Structure formats: C-alpha cells, structure tokens
Length: 332
Ligand SMILES: [Mn+2]
Image 1 (tube, rainbow, N blue to C red):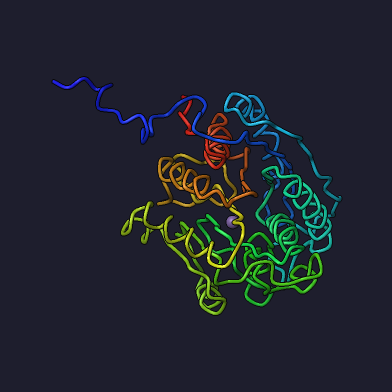
Image 2: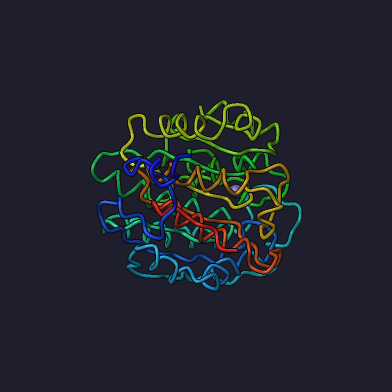
C-alpha cells in the first residue's frame, strides 16, 4: 500500500495550508465598509459591515498573511421613509445613493492606485456603481479598460423603465454598462464603466424577462445555475476569465452573497433556492485570485437580520480570503 504522503506532488499540491507560501508577493487590502440599504427595502442590509467585523475579518486576514492597510467606513446620508415605498417608477433615493457611490468611487480609486486590493463590503448591491466606477476610472487615466465578473442569483440589470419598485439594487449592472438613470451612468464623468462584452454574470437562478432582453442588447455573457450544472464550475470560470480579460487590464469582481444557496447563506436580503454550494463559491473565488487581474471586489447584500448565528458573515470572510489567494479551511 502506498504511503499517502509520498503520492502528493509537492509542486502541484492543492492541499489547504494556513498561509499559502506559494504566493510570491505580500498582499495588502483596504476594506471599505458601506452600510447602505436604500437600494433595497431591507434595513438589515445596513448591518452587513458590522457582521463582517464581528466575524473577525481583521484577525483572519492577518492569519492568512494579508496586510490590512486600512479600514474605512463611508457615511450614509439620512433619508426619510421614501425607501419604504413598494411601488415607484424610476429610481428611489437616487440622490443619496449617488452621494455614497461618488465617495466610494474615490475610495476605491485611491486604494487601487496605492497598489492595494480594494474590498467593498455592503450594504446593498447598488454600491457596485461606486466601486466599479472607481476601479474603471483608475484604469482610464492610463487608457486601460476594466472587465467585470458579477456573481448573483439575479440579473441586477433592470432600468428605470423596466423596474416595478424603483429599487436600485436590481439595476446596478445596467448602470455600469451605461444604461439607466443618466446621473448614475455618468458618475465620474464617463460611461460606460465596462463594455458589456467584457461583463459576465454567473449563478443566475432568477431572471426577469425584461432583464434577458437587456443582457442580449448589451452583449453580456450570462451563466445560469443550469449552465454551472452542465459545464461545471471550472469550465464556467475559465470562460468567464477569458471574456472579462479580452482587451482589458484588470477585472472587478462583484459578489452578491445571495448567489449561494440559502441553505448555506441564509443571511441575505433576497434568498434564492438552488444556488451555488459553498465549495463551488470557494472554488470560483480561488480562480479569481489565480488569474492575478482582480484588484477590486465587492461583497454585498449580507443581511445579518436573516442570518443564523453569523454563519453567512463567516462565509463572507471565507470568500474574501479565497478571492485573495488564501485556500480557506472552513471553520465549523
Ligand atoms: Mn445583486
């Protein structure tokens, strides 16, 4: 009988280790907390940053060998009860969200310019308008382009014309691809932030028919959960990286926690059944790290009010570490 240890090829081993020593350069991160919830109708989303801090994100980064350069929390302007309105045409709380996204754009731009990985922690998904604008503006100064990989159970590609509730968290992908409310699409003075042909949606299980038409119109590539079942996550990720990389110089990853099956990630605003497994999500994020082009990430829609003993928040931290090249051994 063969000794197991002798069968492990040391060069290609993917056994988990506490700190991946194969990583050549020391990694640094800037954490930007954005407790915004006006893009949806769930106040609990504003507690996402607190839940991530409670899951010891700083300590876990340190153990993983990632240097935490700084932590920033953005101010959220006060708003009346307009965010509660269930039916609005157009965009609810547009001014307030625009203010937050403008600040976030500057924070992400500055972080990436410093050579650190910019990690935005939400908050609802409308904040991706700010983070992606920041990552894109940084590249634009030197004539470079950004690719985008967007993990989500939903399309997030509604427009003020197709929305039935005015919730901006269902529109941010359309906005960064140049379609939607003009004050938002023109944030930073340029549009689009990403060419639709360099944008990839992964993990969709719930898509409205209006969104399907916009996906086609903008040339976005979408992999549904069914596609993941059929092709397998390795193939989906290979294709996604290829599409997001074509003619671009960096990739932004926007990760909506609701892409993960509600069994594992109950602490989200809009849970979806039939989503990704934890292993699929950890694998997908590890591929993001291996491609070496991803310098900015969002982790959004964490809603601690729906969580079960903080497990979704801990998973969120696992995914952050995995995206930064650390092979995660899940804590119980
Ligand atoms: Mn989303």
